[in-house]
Amino acid sequence: MGFCLSLIGRSISSFCGCTILLLFLLSCSCFTSTEAYDALDPNGNITIKWDIMSWTPDGYVAVVTMYNFQQYRHIQAPGWSLQWTWAKKEVIWSMLGGQTTEQGDCSRFKGNVPHCCKKDPVVVDLLPGTPYNQQIANCCKGGVVSSWVQDPANAASSFQVSVGSAGTTNKTVRVPKNFTLKAPGPGYTCGPAKIVKPSRFVSQDGRRVTQALMTWNVTCTYSQFLSQKTPTCCVSLSSFYNDTIVPCPTCTCGCQNNITQPGSCVEEDSPYLASVVSGSGKNSYTPLVQCTKHMCPIRVHWHVKLSYKEYWRVKVTITNFNYRMNYTQWNLVVQHPNFDNLTQIFSFNYKSLTPYAAINDTAMLWGVKFYNDLLMQAGPLGNVQSELLFRKDKSTFTFEKGWAFPRRIYFNGDNCVMPPPDSYPWLPNATSRTSTSLLTLIMVLLSALLLLNAHV
Ligand SMILES: *[C@@H]1O[C@H](CO)[C@@H](O)[C@H](O)[C@H]1NC(C)=O
Ligand SMILES: *[C@@H]1O[C@H](CO)[C@@H](O)[C@H](O)[C@H]1NC(C)=O
Ligand SMILES: *[C@@H]1O[C@H](CO)[C@@H](O)[C@H](O)[C@H]1NC(C)=O
Ligand SMILES: *[C@@H]1O[C@H](CO)[C@@H](O)[C@H](O)[C@H]1NC(C)=O
Ligand SMILES: *[C@@H]1O[C@H](CO)[C@@H](O)[C@H](O)[C@H]1NC(C)=O
Ligand SMILES: *[C@@H]1O[C@H](CO)[C@@H](O)[C@H](O)[C@H]1NC(C)=O
Ligand SMILES: *[C@@H]1O[C@H](CO)[C@@H](O)[C@H](O)[C@H]1NC(C)=O
Ligand SMILES: *[C@@H]1O[C@H](CO)[C@@H](O)[C@H](O)[C@H]1NC(C)=O
Ligand SMILES: *[C@@H]1O[C@H](CO)[C@@H](O)[C@H](O)[C@H]1NC(C)=O
Ligand SMILES: *[C@@H]1O[C@H](CO)[C@@H](O)[C@H](O)[C@H]1NC(C)=O
Image 1 (cartoon, rainbow, N blue to C red):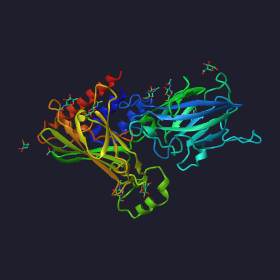
Image 2: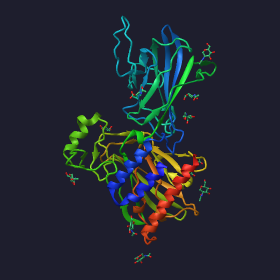
Image 3: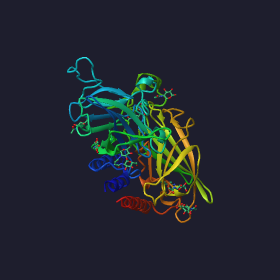
Image 4: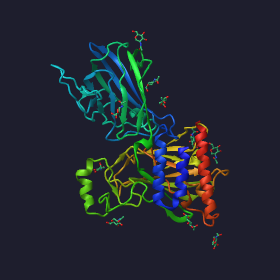
């Protein structure tokens, strides 16, 4: 129900930007109590698998692998960190392909000093270029992990731990507790470790199968409402049949406020800009955005460009307003009922996502490698664009009531805030304004209910 509430809230509050923000915050607080759930990727999760490969005199050696089973949400720089709490007094003697951020107090050890003695170690990936003798397969990518659809070959990340002061048989070993995955900020909730059937490994020539001595799995799921208080992306709309460009809602991601927050954004032509962009702030991951009314790091513009007899054409432009971020391997998820008749897409990769087998209305779009898979920092190069050609289905197609505009857009897995439905550009001489917006509201509500029903 929280979903419906937020939709109602957003469409009703169109008359005042502040109310939108307020209602949005209110709807967020309803969400936090519910379970992590993404309607467009209902089974999405990150599974962390511990395989005990050998027993040692005082513990075991395990390979820990994180699989990103999410369709479109990836982990970008500065990468993941994984924390857990040991069940007993375990220590980490050594690691390959990863390291703990702190060693902790190892003073009880004489001679050999462990890699980490903390009760709740935090592990991070090693950086690219790590010496070969400290690497293992799937390691050393600075904690960057691709999504399952975009690049399955890079959707896993591994490290090896050698654990001491631990159980040395599958009866005495204790599974670690309280896993916390940051990617890099909050957003993921991890369940308890569950002992599962030992993993099997097939040799490269396929002629021999080995298996782990013991395996446990931890499943982590994402919720945008845990991850951040403010949106990071907004949508603007325009069409060939109406001159109005509907901008992103004002204050979507923040408000310009020179008094309480000077320097919260940068003017495009500010002399200060050059020093910010090339200077010290470069490695900071807090966004530094160009001054706009919406203050979002990312804006997605949907332009209904042309109508042919049998087809219609849309131009999509993604603009980066963040001076501190080059988005590598960005992706967009778009929901529109005409995606079941997408005929052609120019200069982006495309895959249809069908979370509910019967409904084919959602697509994932991402850049072409070495061409536009990098969305550059704010500035003249900070945008990518594509055109989509849809075939009109006579029974559903219309330019009325905002039908040609997307129902939902995600950038890198995070929801982009849409303008209120009653502000969408309308066809000249359409039905009166109020009835249009009411109809739109009813349509949105109905489709939300359908979606909710589809997975109950
Ligand atoms: C995690 O995702 C995988 C792949 O989609 C799925 O097979 C598995 O059931 C999911 N696990 C949980 C606990 O949802
Ligand atoms: C532990 O190992 C024994 C054989 O040594 C095996 O029979 C048993 O199923 C294993 N238990 C688990 C939980 O893996
Ligand atoms: C689990 O770990 C988190 C992060 O370190 C910590 O805040 C929390 O208190 C821990 N919970 C338990 C039950 O140990
Ligand atoms: C444990 O995780 C691995 C890797 O994701 C998966 O192949 C296996 O099916 C999982 N086991 C269970 C019981 O979920
Ligand atoms: C902030 O300052 C800029 C120019 O420095 C100005 O254009 C803008 O209107 C100011 N915003 C507010 C909210 O005062
Ligand atoms: C983005 O990439 C360009 C070109 O590679 C580089 O000059 C710039 O410093 C990068 N910006 C950031 C914030 O990393
Ligand atoms: C969804 O529709 C598109 C466009 O017709 C098609 O390419 C795609 O294969 C469809 N996907 C499924 C799962 O039916
Ligand atoms: C649109 O796609 C649906 C489902 O794939 C198909 O049944 C229908 O015939 C298509 N319509 C057109 C006009 O191609
Ligand atoms: C274009 O759409 C806007 C609503 O966004 C409306 O106010 C305006 O009257 C429309 N223009 C025409 C020519 O119909
Ligand atoms: C649209 O409405 C305006 C004013 O109501 C009228 O002058 C105009 O002729 C109408 N245009 C069409 C194409 O009906």
